[in-house]
Amino acid sequence: MTFDRPSGSDLVTFGGYCAAAAIYIAIGVAWLDFLLSFWVGLAYVVVTCWAVPTLVRRLA
Amino acid sequence: MSWVAHDLEPYAIQKHTMIKLAFVPLLIGSYSPDMMTKWFVYGIHLGPWELKASDPAQFHRGWPGFGFTHSLIYGVAIGLIIWKVFGSRLWGVSFLIGQWAHALTDTGDTVGTMLLFPWTLHFHLDAWAYAGQTGRYVDAAAYFSGLGGMWDLVWIVYGLFSWRVLTSSYFDTRIYAADAFWPWLNRAVPRGALLTVYRAAFFYGTSRWIAWTIWAHVIHHYPYDLSWGGPHWVPAAHP
Image 1 (cartoon, rainbow over the protein chains, first blue to last red):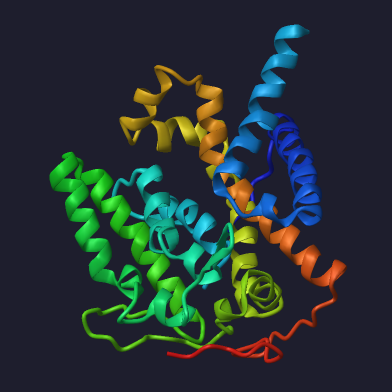
Image 2: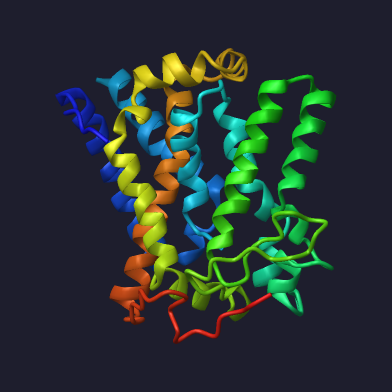
């Protein structure tokens, strides 16, 4: 297995997902039911990692 | 049982399989054996009633029970139905491979799976304790304290090393282009949202692994036991 280095753009995207994951994990640890549904996870990641950034870009 | 591997394995399988696969049915196949059964293994409350299997391991993996959902022939049967009824060989084969990955992965615990159903012999490696009968939370604590959780971690680390499978260009060339489902969905859903949907199972699995590990070991201090068949502080079920 080799590890090629990600670009700056890749890292920015990864950072966004990490931030979203940190919030998801915090909510999940406090309220375990939040972790149980794939559909909740799917909706969460679409909102936080696509809808919100898209909205912010349009407003900017 | 596995808590996270079924979310992550499809990314590796899709990357390394020599034949063309569609990601969505691969993921559905990977989830499929537990889709109809997990709620009854742990039980749910409906008003004053609790609906729960009297013998969760038997119900989940055994016969009589729904253990046939973890057999190889179940994947063949559902894959053939998808192929012949819905007319997509690609979706049928992708479902089959995802379901087989699930059935094989679950042989790692102490109950194992009836891989060659209708032969009812359970194939089990006994690497980690099956503790579904103890309820969802003790099961989670046990799973993330033993080799099951470590096996999931292997897939997370593998995924991070293979990070290109999560990139936009990989999605365009290997995922979107392989399956007419994505262009069809793209008529109503923007491409950026589709890319996020594709990444969702990896996000979901990895985040849940971290969250449950924090819950089990930072909040509740369940002891790690990485010995074969552990953790031994939980009563493991056997076939």
